[in-house]
Length: 167
Image (cartoon, rainbow, N blue to C red; front, side, top):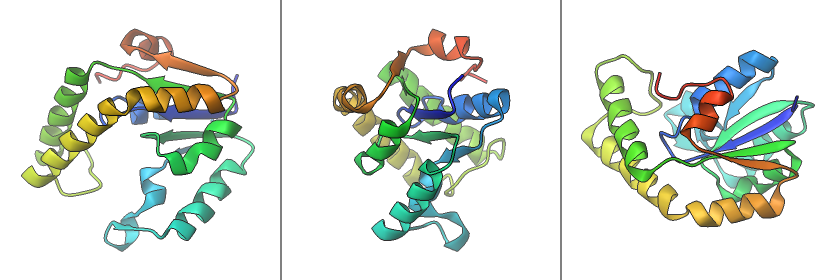
């Protein structure tokens, strides 16, 4: 069993679903790095680099954790400290479809959201997804160069870990 798990993938790839299931399965606290970068309690404003660094260092100082992120470079120390890093690699059109379905579920109140599901936010999410897909090779290379152990997960691999990202 791994005590420090780092999950990286594009928006809509199933990071949160996988982290929740692994957290419950192994009884390990999970952290969404979006909540480290953005202060949801104060109008969803971006924290300063110093605030982000302090919060992140508190997380990785713990004995165990599950971290999920889109693969920001500023969190490279988490990859280095992780027992294993997973990168969720799905086809780009699957990612786009999931972003649209997520937005619809948020819009009709079936899913929580960190920011109001407006048309502008949908296009922003699709823009992030496109950027994540574009930067995939660089992120995988960074994972390979900084991880003790890593695994590139396709959809079937995610399901084998106990998560169905289509739920």
